[in-house]
Image 1 (cartoon, rainbow, N blue to C red):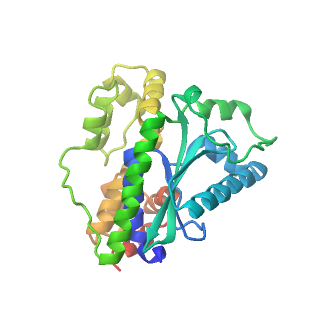
Image 2: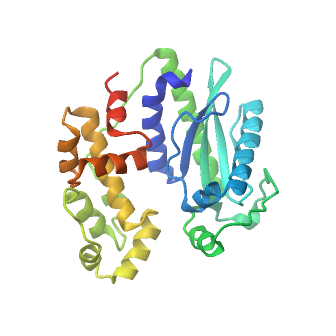
Image 3: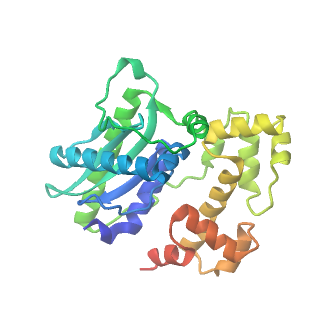
Length: 293
């Protein structure tokens, strides 16, 4: 059933990622991925690229899904790599139709709360320990009570989805936001001027050294602070913001891909398509088609 509402679910998933800064994907009632994985951490990508470790990731997903699907309640657990994830079932007319898979985080109050280890085996042998440790340090940390609140909000979101399916009416852009989110989120940060500059000059070729100078930081200091504050490298952040702008044009205008590519400061339209597909898992034309059906 949920497959018919992929366009609407994609927008909800994007907003969940924006709100939680967690990894999110939506599955159907059989556990098959309905949307592409969003905001998956580099730490988890390393595991999932390793054939042996990837099988453990899949086993974790399957076992956790089976528990949540049986109880029809949100389920928080620890995966084989030690990260905390949760499953939020989506129910329609008392029947399971899918679920949110959210997480890839660490608990701040780890020592005060024990979670079930969903899978105790973890025997991967062929991976770069140094890279694993480095990316472990970038994982988001959340207090357990905050995680419970997020689970509650996602449960309410699942109820909203059910109501929308029943009424056959989806409510988009309920709140008109005229304040750039970055100015609120980073207003007291060392990188606030950088975020403002990036958003106001997204069409331009933005250089790391110029933006670091705006913040009165060395390139290495700026890169470290920027990664900590945004969860993205400087290059990744700019590309993601360019793609967000491109999505806006694809949704509400009839501009050609070449025109949109120029609007976001990417001269080569084929490179634009490649970058778009990397972050959205579908090409620009397919994305536009979702909003023209």
